[in-house]
Amino acid sequence: MRDRTEVHRTILESGIIAVIRASNSQMAFNLAEAAYRGGITAVEITMTVPGGLEIIRELAEKYRDSDLMIGAGTVMDAPTARLAILSQAEYIICPHLDIDVIKTCHRYNKLCIPGAMSVTEIVQAMTEGADLVKIFPASILGPGFIKAVRGPLPQAMMVPTGGVNIDNIEKWFEAGAVAVAVGSELTKEAILKSDYGILERTAREYVTRAKAARQKFAEK
Image (cartoon, rainbow, N blue to C red):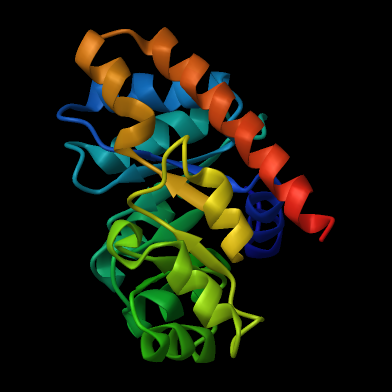
């Protein structure tokens, strides 16, 4: 199992997290595998998926010797964070800011990405040692929010979630995001058509776009 520092470095290097939500465990498992085949190495299984902890455990076991990193998302409290970590989740993502969740993750040397939608919450998350900060809902806040926050807080490592798609991914990196998390925009067509090959191809396109955008703005 990778430690918190390695997971942090890998997410920053790849720049993209696949958010997996599904109505059943088998679909979630298949979506996660398809995203990985498409080149996304950080996959988040949300706790809204039936049997989410077991999916994390099964994926972790199957891909133990690979570069796939499995995280738990939509984690609402510290007990759930602990259960996810014991199920071999390598990072924990929350839609909100919960100090106890951050402390629990760090107690087990696991990376934590709490959610925030205000400057106050972002600063509090950073003060409490959050490794990255999930900007949610990004669809409402927009790239302009990240750009504005980066003015007084250039050290804030923000990961927009919700509202990121293939057409605007470059704008998020241009605004200063260190990574992006993509959910329904990545998986919806594959789910609708019951074709995981679609997700694999879509994932490749996201990886290519993210890499190009990061290189472009790193040069500025």
